[in-house]
Image (cartoon, rainbow, N blue to C red; front, side):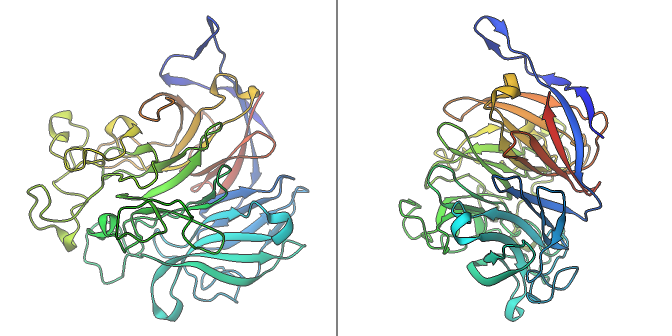
Length: 419
C-alpha cells in the first residue's frame, strides 16, 4: 500500500522561479519488490521491465506484470545459478552493477559487474550476456573488462575485509552511448595514480570493453581510463541537458563527494605512503591516516588526508558537494527529470548507505542536489523518510518518471511517486 507524506526539507532554501517559490513535490512510497537479500543495483527497459542485482544471489528480472524471474546462467557459489561458478560474494564484494545495452531491442545484451575467482585469480569483472526472450536465461558470456582490481585476502590492512573498495556501478551515457565503469582503489595505495592499474578509476569503454575513442588520460595510462585518482566511487549519473557525468564517492571517514567529471581528469585521491611528508602506513595504504577518528572536530579536520588533494594536485577536479565534510557511505546517484518533480526537476538525488563512522551521524537519507552549471558547487535539500529506514544502495529514475530506490537492510525496492 502506498504511503503519502510531505517531503521534509533540511538545509537549503526552496528554489525560486519567476519571482515565486517553486513548490516541492508531495511524495508517496510503495514497495514493489520485497524479500530481497542485499539488493545492490537496478536498470530499466522502456516498457518497465526491471533488472536488479542482489550481491550474493545474482541477477533477477521483474516483468511489467509483476512476475519476478531469477535469471539462470549467471552466478556462482552462494545463491547463484551453476553455469558461472567463478562468481562469488564476500564482504563488500559480489554481484554489483547492472546495465542494459542502449540497442537492447536488437542485441538483448545485459551487463553486470561482479567479483570473480576465475582460474583462482581474484578480480572484479564486467561481463556481457545475451538474455533470452523469456527473461529467464542468459548465454554468450563475454568478459569485456576482466582485469579490475580486488583486495586480496592476504592484505594486512586493518580496515575493510577482503573485497573492500570495489566501486561497481556501470552506466551507459545517453549522450555518447559508451559504458562508464566505476572502480575502487582496493586499499592499494598506489592504485589511484597508477597508470596501468585500473582500480581507483572511471573507465569509458564500448560494448566490447575497448577504450572509447576520445578518452584523453595522461600519457602512459591505460586507454580505457576516463578519470583517475578515485577512492571508491559507487555512483555515476548523467545530467539531463548536457549529459555530463557525475560520480558519488565514499570518503575516508570524512568528505563523501559528488564530482563533475572531466575527460582525463584527476580526482585527487592519493593514499600512497611518503607523500606530502607521510610516514609508513598499514599495508602501504594511508587512506585512513593520520588518525581520522576526530572527523567531527573541525579543529582536527585540517590535519586529515584530503579526499581531493588540491594542494598536491591543484588541477584536480573539485567536488560539487562534500557532505558537509562527513563520511556516511555515499552510494548511488541519479538525476530527476520531469515537470512533476516541480522544484526538483533537473536535480540530482544521492543516497547514503547509513554508516556512522566514529561519531559521525548515521546517514539513512536521500539528498536533493541542485548543482551549478559549471559543476563546481551545489545547494542541498535532505529528504526525510518517516516510514522508511535502511541503507540506500541504488537510486534510479524509471521510464514512468518515478524514482526507485533499493534498501539493503530492508531487502526491498521502493517506488517513490511525486503526487
